[in-house]
Amino acid sequence: MRHKDQILITVSLSALVWALRWVLLGLQPVWGDGHVYVAMAAGAEGSPPWSFHILTPRLAVLLSGRDPVAGFFGIAGLSFILASAATVAMLGVGSLRMAPRERLLGAALFMAVYPGVAMFRAYFLVDSLSYALLAVACAAVVHRRDGLLALVTLVGIFNRETAFFVAPVWLFLNIGEVPPVRIAIRSARVFGPAVAAYILLHHTPLFFGHYPAHLNYLRFDVMHALWKGNLSWLGTENIIYGLGICVFLSYGPVWLLASYGYYQSLFVLRDGTRRLMLALGTLALPTGLALSVVDWRRGFQPLFPAVIVSSVLGLRAITCDLPKADWYLGAFGTVLAANFTTEAWWSVKISVPVGISMSVWFCLIMFILLRKQFVIQCHCVTSAELGASEQRHS
Image (cartoon, rainbow, N blue to C red; front, side):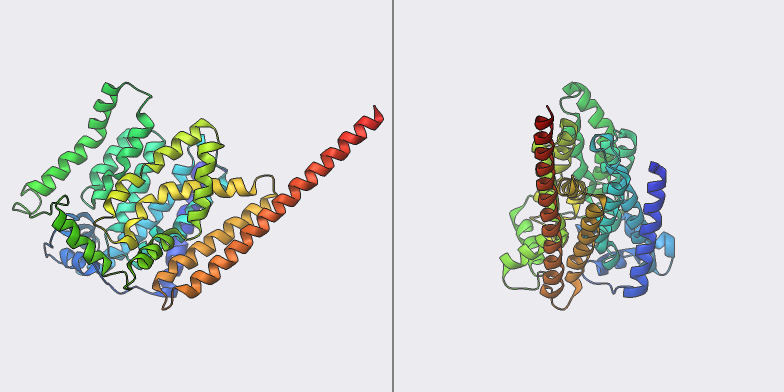
């Protein structure tokens, strides 16, 4: 299957998934920070840090006129499709040696985990476009398209600061391949326009007509206030339990597959895969720093490029030496389990869908592993019998 055909299938499938969610769940009510962004689209300036996230609100007005909510929904839908297609493109890099079905699985996993589901459930936030652009940026990095990366980062900085999260990925892939002076020059070309745009947005009257107020995230009192505000959204007084639920539900069973896939990439697979996965793993650096000031329910979304790639590698490792049917069984079960655990955020009782989906998924994975053990034993017995037969004939 040609790469263009895979992209076309992904675009069609993601559009279908979006339409089905719309039909089955309806347009979700605006909540949380969404009220701030809808007000910004209606003409209000907003307070920092939301006031600097201007791209999605202004596009929403441009697309829908008097109904900014419809504009937000349309932008989120297009972002969902774009991020799914960019995930397939990222998985198409040569060093990963992904089969077409594995690339399509990556797109399906994105649609099922929190970053994809939240694009529909929380379409009124700026997250949708931010993470679609991050997916495009990661695809540009792994395919060494610096021009596209520079453009996406420049556009993304007007939507959210996560546009810069791709910088350590780019640096890791380039360090050691070219001299430091050339890296400095190339990094200035790639990220310089976005840095200049960030300074103009935050420290000049160019976009607001006056010098905007802004927060100093390095001040302890600011960090403390944001942290306390984010804890209020956990819905429980048990902070450790609440934060743990945030971590788990962001990717559900995909975390486990991703951990195994990451282990495989570091200690089993060849150097090209190892270097790429280490590079994508550097997304954890800015993500971890941001967790001190962002809502943990949404805070792990920037990790999705690394999590999805490593989870596809994990399923490949688990089902190697088995028929394709086992791979399809594991892929289908993981996508369903991931979607059910993610949707649990919006359930009255989180434990019920999580418990059912994870139990079924664990049973499925155990079945595949037992089959693999059986196949290996049969292969060893057959090899021993063939060896004994050859000795008798000789």
